[in-house]
Every structure is written in structure tokens, then in C-alpha cells.
Amino acid sequence: MSRRLHVIGAGLAGLAAALRGLEAGFAVTLYEASGQAGGRCRSYLDASLGMEIDNGNHLLLSGNRETLAYLDRIGARDTLTGPERARFPFRDLATGEQWVLKPGYLLPWTPARRAPGTSAADYLPWRLLTAGPEAVVEDCLTTGTALERVWRPLLVSALNTPLEQASARLAGRLLRDTLLRGEVFCRPLVARDSLGASFIEPALAVLERAAASVRYHHRLTGLDYEGDDVGTLSFGDGRVVLSPGDAVILALPPEQAAALLGLDLPLDHQPIANGHFRFATDGLPGDESFLGLVGGTAEWLFRRNDILSTTTSAASMLADQPAGEIANLLWHDIVRALDLPAGTPLPPHRIVKEKRATLAQTPAMVRARPSAATIWRNLALAGDWTDTGLPCTIEGAVRSGRLAVEAID
Image 1 (cartoon, one colour):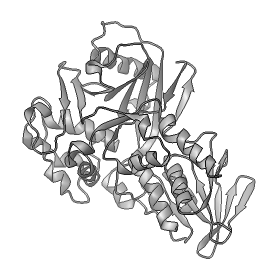
Image 2 (spheres, rainbow, N blue to C red):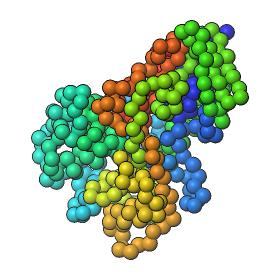
Image 3 (cartoon, helix red, strand yellow):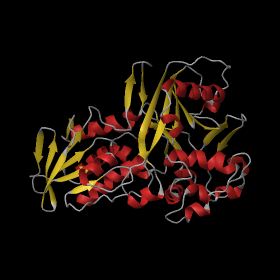
Image 4 (cartoon, helix red, strand yellow):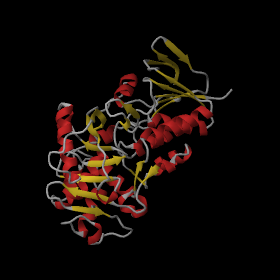
């Protein structure tokens, strides 16, 4: 009889764990509390826009090796698109200046590859790379143009935490894996059609072909233990009794996992605000697929078909504002970014506020992150909030799925 892996949570971490479980020889059952897989990495048809949108925008990098391996596993790498070379276009909404960051193979970067007003030395963030466990990003960077035009837009979006609170060690790890490894590791990539079409639907198809069971509307309410093992899973009125050799991976949000297992975690969250606007345009400046924005409310602008989407990370100042006010702020930024006529009316739109998008990625959070392994032999944890060594990103979520399977296999 084959061993069965019970994966609780069908977000990206859970899907990655399920796929790895298949490779490790498990039969797999995947449980999801809602009626849809994907978690925070999902797409849906929005009735007010009449088009499919993503709940949020995600910018990947070619150095995200775990994510690209996941996409290879589900046959979906070709669903990502991006420039042939690493380039990050920016516009300063206050001054109108435009530039393109072009990471090269050698540092320091030449003037043509960096932001106006910055020097070669600004791209050698040694203090970030050698930071102690209690250091925060802002204390490791010099105040000035490079902070505002390079490091703040890049690192706030990656860490979803204000730089005066964000872990410098996490930032340093991110830079080592991507920007500082050269152009081949930091080419930007985005989902060509949707997050669902790239990350979720192909994964579910692979699981279906492997005869894995996916059970929606199954919310885990408790675990019973037999010695050093989990023995029973409770789902509302139903119970699942584990057989010898079976294993469980909890790929749940941190607050749910903490409540079930009694984990002592700092559960301070940071929000992300996304705006989606239906507006036909010939494209972004330079025919780019995305644009970094400095000096406004929106931090990144993406275009897919007739949808313009913005993202604002660490968006505490927006979290409690009415959607209409947020829409006006973001649309004002888009009008300036695209040089549209002043007074261009607000088009049909959807504002998506993820108030608990990620844990605040502070030094305290980094210290408290649990490993994949637990004190129970057949129970492991997955999720971008676990100790992957990476920020809470798609790359971290996918890596957590692998680490969880390794912990129980």
C-alpha cells in the first residue's frame, strides 16, 4: 500500500508540496478550505470589469530557480514573458524623469545602466550583505537619491515591509541570489495571461493526471496525535484517520497554523493594495510590460490587454481608506505616468486590498520563523512564512513546499 501525503491548503506552497510529494512516491490528497486553489496567487473573472484579473501583481526574476523549476514541473515556463535582457524601467512622477536600470555582469554599473543622480558606489550595498541579525534595511543604506530611486522601490516590493522595519539579512539574501549575480539572474518575468494560467491551472492538471485527490470546502479544525505522530485530521463534521506511513503538510496561513499547533509567532502583517483599471492604451512607455513609479502612491504599473494594474506594497496608509479614494489616487498616478490628458476620467476599476498579504518581515519575524520539520514525525510546515531563508514571495512559497516534503520523506 502506498503512503499518502495529506496537504492542507491549496495555495502555492501547498501545490508545490503536493507536486513534490508525488515525486517522492506519495499518493496525494490536497484539502482547501475555500472553493478555489491558489490562495494569494489566484485569478478570477471580475464582473465589474468584464475581464479576468489577478488578485495581485507579481514580478518574478530569472534567478528565482525554485519557481522556474516548479513551472518546468507543470509544463508552464513558457507562460511567463519578459524582456530578453534585464531591464527595469522607472519614471519619477514628481519630476517626469525616466530611466532604465540595467543590471550588468560586472559591478559597479556604468552610468548608462543606473538611475540619474546615483553613483557606482551606490550599487555596492556592502552593509546589507554583511548585516547582523538585528539590522534593518534603512540603517544599512545611505540616505539620498539611490535610496529613493533604486533601493526603496526594489526592496519594499520584495519585502512588503517599510525599510525602517525590514530585515537587512533578508534583503541581503535576496540581492545575493539575483541582482548581484549579474544580468542572467535578474531578468524580470511576468505571467503572460494570468497567475492562474501560469501557476495554478497547470499544477492542478498535473495532480489530476496523477490521480491526486483535491477536496475543496474542507477546513481543518483540529489534529489528534498518537505518540509522536499525527493520527487523525478533523474537518468540521468529518475525520480522516491516517494509516502507518502517511504524512501531513500544513500549508496554511501563519495565524491558522499557529492556532492549530500553538506556535509562538509574531503575527504582525503588512498589506498590499492593487488597483485594476479597464482602459485601452497603445502600451506603456517604451512598449514595456511594467513600469516602476517613484514619487506617487502606486509603486509599479503593469499592462495586460486592456487592463492597467498597479501595486503598492507595505500599504498601511491605504488599508483603511475607501476603495473610491484609493482608485482616484492610483488613477492620478497612471495619468501622469502615461502622459494622459489632465482630467482623463476614472475608468471602470477594481481595488483589491490584501490587508494580511504577508507577515511583516522584521528581524523578530526572521528569528521566529519555524523550520519545515516539527516535533511530530509525520507533520511538516509549508508557507512563505516558514524558515526558507527567503522573503515571503512566490519563490519562498515554492521552496517551502520542497523543504516540507524533504522534512517528512
